[in-house]
Length: 145
Image 1 (cartoon, rainbow, N blue to C red):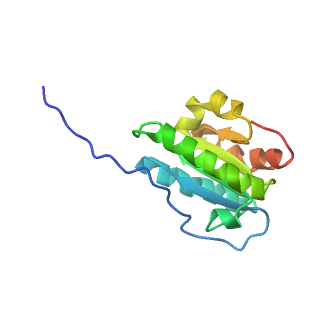
Image 2 (cartoon, helix red, strand yellow):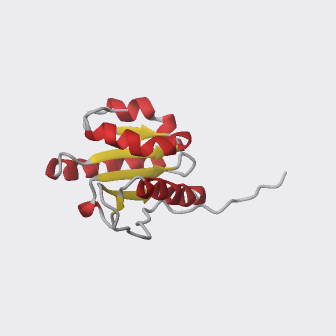
């Protein structure tokens, strides 16, 4: 039996590559995990921009922070939970900020993420990305989902 070791990508956030001048809320997307997530982030950014959201270059500029996750990478869950706890501080300064978790980890951990008070406003799996603009607007209106 031959064992093949696959390379492991480090779990590091990737900042938004572009910003648009479109009106509306500013959205910041951090990407964690596998290479496919980089592509998913580009898709999410395009969907949001097409619906009038501006792409922010930092959390400080953002009205919406989305963490695009991967359930495959080692320690991914722990790192995402740490990041979400860090974002609680931002939410205290900007109570209107919407925080969401996207991707395959989001799907798997939907109940636990939504169950933790003041952690996330929305949890969206890969099949729901097209609904993101509507889900974000609902979150601004106070809905969680």
